[in-house]
Amino acid sequence: MNPTNPSGPSDDRDANAQPGAHAEAAPAKPRRAALVIGLACLAAALLAAGIVPRLEARTAQAQQVAAQRDLIVSTLVPQRAPASQDLLLPGSVMSWADASIYARTSGYVQHWYADIGAHVKAGQTLAQIDTPELDAQLQQARADAATAQANYRFASSTAQRWQTMLQTQSVSPQDAQAKTSDAAAKLATLQAAQANVSRLQELVSYQKVTAPFDGVITARNVQVGALVTAGGTPGLATMPGELFHIAQTDRLRVYVDVPQDDASLVTPGTAVWLTTQQYPGRRFAASVARTSNVIDPVSRTLHVEVDVDNHDGALMPGAYAQVHLALTTATPALELPVSALLFRPDGVTIAVVDAHDKVQLRKVTIGRDFGTYVEIATGLAASDRVIDNPGDAIANGQSVHVTATSAPGNKA
Image 1: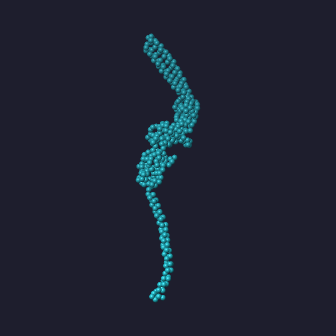
Image 2: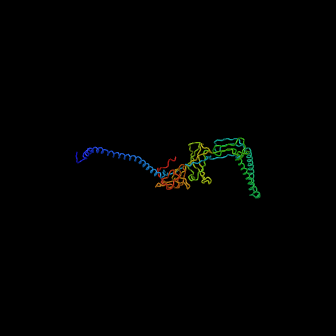
């Protein structure tokens, strides 16, 4: 025990105990630092897990808002309209020639030789009329003509004798002139009698009712024994006197009325074909024969006649047909689908996208109409980007976002 150091023993104990305490405290500090770092990492991970999706969502939302700020549209490139156009119009089929046959002489029907539906030739006898009174008148006229012939011969010979005697002064000039005048009067009487015979012979020839042209009989209004008069039938108010009705059907006429807008494209020789419901899929070739060359002020149409060859008899007069006119223009313009048009109070308008993706509203003039497509006569250029299906609210100068530019689809 050190008397000079009362605390010596305890210092020795403390000195002996201090190394162990330091040994226990030294490992505790790294564990505490690792725990702090782990907690910090966990907090950072949790923070990142909550903030990053929000940041991404905000970024995507901002991009979507920016994309929706401009109107999204698709555009079309104008195409050249076809040079030929099929103009479909209704037409009425008519026979090439159509005639009502009447009696030219009065009498009784002795025979008839052609019934409804019969195909006849020009000059073929259709009926025979018995005319006993006319035959008697002809005989009388021939007798009168013979009498006039005899009187003229006697007067003529007498005038010649008196002219011979006048040369020898055997008769007076006045008597000779009277005989010459009597011969001239007898000649006139003879000519009148001969003319009457010719007239009656012509009427007798009408005893045979003949066909004026090749055709088909469409009506027969006579019976054997019926009384007929020249130009009409007496006693029958319901029948105007028509004996037969004949129509020429080997060639037909079709009349159509072409609208004023297309009238200038229709000329004689324009290609035409007909279609009918009786013959689905069949085309009947035809051609424009003539036009009226005037516009009807009431309907604003051009009257056109179309001729059709019908030797096979497939088409019947009076039928309804659809007439297809192949109209051709030398300078076709550009065309657009009707979905690209805006119909506004100031006229037809299209929406065009310029080089800065701005909308330009432009008025146009419509030319030919192809149904789902129309020809744009004015207001459209081949390099324009035209908005397809523009909304009614689209405005001039509006910014748009073009997603696709394409040519018009199939027009078939």
